[in-house]
Length: 451
Image (cartoon, rainbow, N blue to C red; front, side):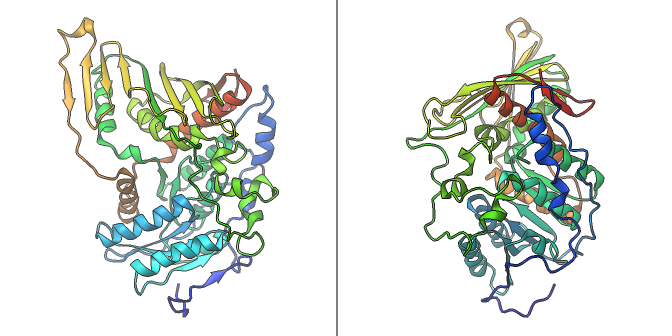
């Protein structure tokens, strides 16, 4: 796409889309009804039968020496980090990438990201948008990074796929399970598209080493594993996201659009800045933190779909936060394995990352993958310490993996199938935390219900 606007005066699109876009927000219109029905204990939780499955449009041509042109949807805290990271990757010549489009409902946010683009990409035009449809309607963008709020992830991703754009979607992949199942369905219907989910620990070599050991039967039957994500603060979690007094809904911030499918609520800067603390907008610790450690463990275990999830915990310290500050998950898998996961924002001492087997155990607490035999098998199994290379910043490694997949069309590392299995845990554990029940998932029908 060509544009005569000089780099110092970026194009701003604040009105409705001016082009006939492929998919509108109606693609997820029935999701709210599904979630409402699922609140009843006897209801099935699954894919919305009215959800549409679009086919992807034509991808922008990309020559061997051409820059990968990307857009970023959502340039708040995480999105602005992606912008700076992509600029750094290009500056270090780790990939030939340009940030050519920014989209956010908040003008002060995209203004800050735009300044960074102008400083690091001299001569490269970066345009700004309020409506993601307008960004996706461009025919010169190869991929989009989606760092919007959780309740927008599925819509932004599906619309991007429909527009022929490869996707890097931040974790958790979606807010609720029906959205995840819909997104999985769309990805399967468009196998030529590259979709990366932002769980960067998938890049750590120790998990690939553990996966190989398990596949070889090195520890016998894998019985149960454990992992955790725990941290602490004096004031409370996610309060480091600052409230900008310059925000003015109706003037420089489209609050109604930000609320989106959840329905417009009364303006609340606390919710806008710190939405992870509120149950309508986020699953809190479970979706924001625990997916980082659960996903690579599930990758290594290759245990299939979760089939039963129960969670407990509470508000023990940060009572002002609506979401819980302590969670403990017990997850059973179809292959016959149990995963125990702890999460806290009130204490930073976690569990040792460990996979237990009948004959030996795999320790994953450090950089390496260490196998130690059980006492009854010390004469039969040798201890192994499999060294793992230092990959540096694993999030940058995941970004580079996505960029490489855009170029080569080879599979990326953190894919939607595994992210959907993680979303089964996230959604059902969240429900369990709030209503005290256990939940079952049926892999045959891809539906869940209270046990």
